[in-house]
Length: 49
Image (cartoon, rainbow, N blue to C red):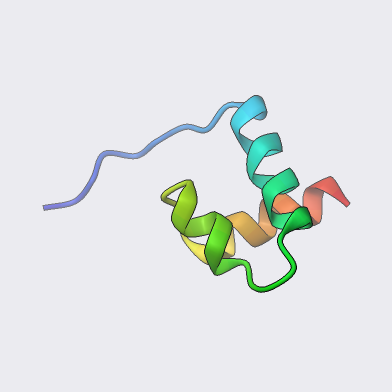
């Protein structure tokens, strides 16, 4: 069964981007923390830069 589609607010995307920028290791860490796919956290980070 699929999960329902989630719409993320701008504030949530900013939190993910900041977490992705401050992490020294991989994008998987903030993605796991915020229950996202690694590509989503990376794209939020790229928009923030």
